[in-house]
Amino acid sequence: MNINKVADNIYFVGVNDRVTTRFEGLWSLPYGVSLNSYLIRGEKVALIDTVSVGDSNNLIANLNLVSSKIDYLIVNHMEPDHSGAIPEIIAHNPGIKVVTNKIAIGMIKGFYHIDDDSVFMEVKDGDTLDLGNGQTLRFYMTPMVHWPETMMTYLESSKMLFSGDAFGTFGALSGEILDSAYLFEDFENEMRRYYTAIVAKYSVHVQKALKKLAGVELEYICPTHGPVWHDYINEVVDAYNNMSLQEPEDGVVIVYGTMYGNTAAMAEQVATSLRAEGVKTVKIYDAGATEMSFILRDIWRYKGLIVASPTYSMDLFPPIEALLTALRIREIKNRVTAALGSFAWAPSIAAKKIEQRLTEMGLTVADTFSVKLALNEASLQSLRELSHKFVELLNTPN
Ligand code: FEO
Image 1 (tube, rainbow, N blue to C red):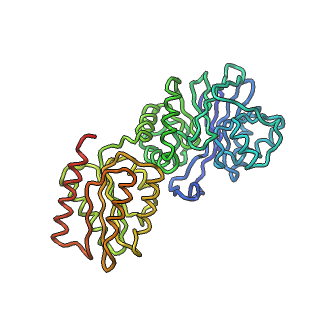
Image 2: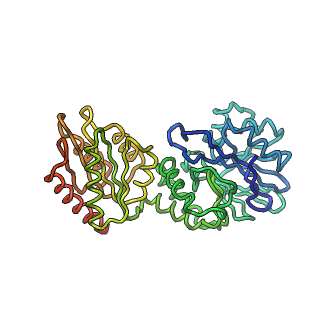
Image 3: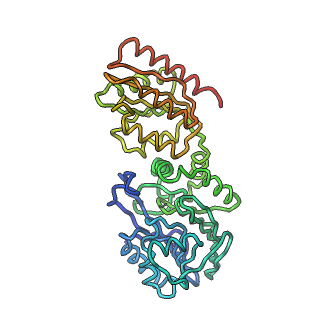
């Protein structure tokens, strides 16, 4: 049981998942994740989003503590981490209306074989639903944040936005849903990691949604993952704006793949040179050792990116190849980059391939450099020169 009051007559009835190890089967969850479902009591009772199918029983148990029946199920988002319990909720609440948009209705029918049209109440952008007792919901269509059916629901009386995945975070809650019980730093990294892994691909649509909601007064943002934002609304909206506009902060991420440590040594040397050039934020990742979402998170945050790979089977080292693909898919832009390669007996192709991939993404490549076998005095000096050139470009205003 996991009930938290958000405000008068509004409850968090979702669950903390500390068992699933990979979100979407991909992204690691060292701190778990919360699946947020909210209940609003007016004269009528509305539930906003559900949880995954495996957590249906926990949701039903939570609901039993606050309401004997639900009149409306509002479906903001159909990804199964939020829609999995829809069949259970319908089964437990005869006469319930599922309130959502046309695309979501099609998805509910397809995912869960619920074909009785009388269950559904279709809404469009700007429609309202009066729950009584002064509780009126307004619906905003926000497609592609994160799926095409995505919408948000605004409770006018409390100035509360149920935002779906937008403003969500990885990391399970620890005893409280409201952000005022936490430091912003407790969730910032996991919010950024969630954004980069799940939402970044749709940054253009995030901007459209932010513009659409610009005139909406916000006292609370209730996402489908992580805390309800109240004290830190400005911080989280600013972060979302920066992340979706791709306006990175000062700092450099160095990411490398390495088999026997020679490419790692290049990365370490470049980090030392960057520090000597005055760069205060330098993050280094071994792409073979760190799950990709942590690396993507910091690449999305900082302006500088240096990628290093050995030649491997006449191509890039596989984790670097995968990382570059993930960056291309997310349409990264506005970064200063450099490409480093190493090789032993095979041709020196890694740096060229990295440079080609970065250039194809439209990114500025400050320099490239390759080392045969191991570093020596000449290559150390070349890396110092590359770092100097890189920092000069990094410090050049756009
Ligand atoms: Fe948390 Fe797009 O689902």
